[in-house]
Image 1 (cartoon, rainbow, N blue to C red):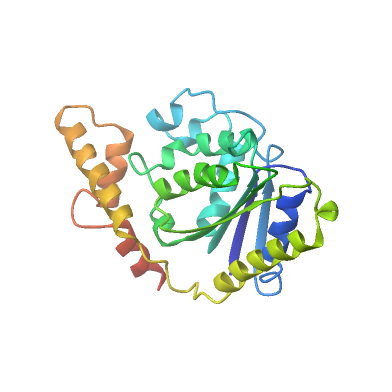
Image 2 (spheres, rainbow, N blue to C red):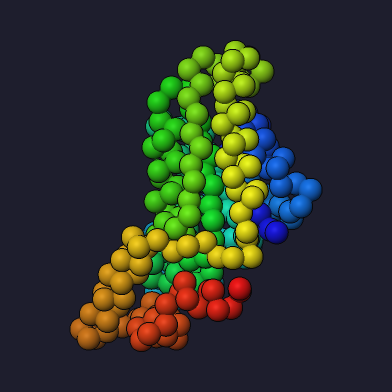
Amino acid sequence: MKITVINGTEKYGVTYKLKEFFLNHFKESSEITEYYLPKDCPNFCIGCTSCFMNGENTCKDFSYINKIEKSLLEADLIVMTSPAYVMHTTGAMKALLDHFGYRWMPHRPAPEMFGKRAVVITQCLGAGAKQAAKDIKHSLSWWGISKISIFSGSLMSNIFWDKLPSKKQKRLTKKINKLAIKFSKMNYKKPAHTKCVTKIKFKLCRFIQKKVSKSGGAGLDYKYWQEQGWLNKKRPWKHYKKENV
């Protein structure tokens, strides 16, 4: 089993601690690849749209993005972590997600994503953990992932794990371990179920692609959908099951 972890900060704080508790349930049986932001993707997306118009390999940050994407596509489980900064995910995580705009469903989603599972781990001192998780989940869902679970914790006392009240430590540890046990018992040889809402999004994007082509605006995205066979009867979740089960 392969796990890819994207850490939204390089700090070894409470989020890191919670992530380690989660991964402890997989370390003996899994190959875990981790990335730390901004170190492993130090640049902002500048909105040049080259990835949309000319292909992702033309992105100025392709060397960073391509490496991370390969890990994501190979992973059986994706873990995304981020503390809440001003009630949202970290700027480094947002910058990474912006780079993957071309993988959103209206553009060129990877068929592998439709069978994956993901966990989002967030925490904050006060409010904002749920919103930070929502920022990340939003992108993951538009990549085609249906099975996304969220862990969010509110510290309310101190930003350092060792200085948290023991009662708070036990509560957070129990909660993250419960989630880890749930995911450790899953059968990763079988792709995750693609939910109805994901299929509806796909159907809408398929309609848009057909509409764009009729108006004479067909480009790289349309060609990709055509090559995948999605404008006909093929569907990414069915293709993924056929290839991997």
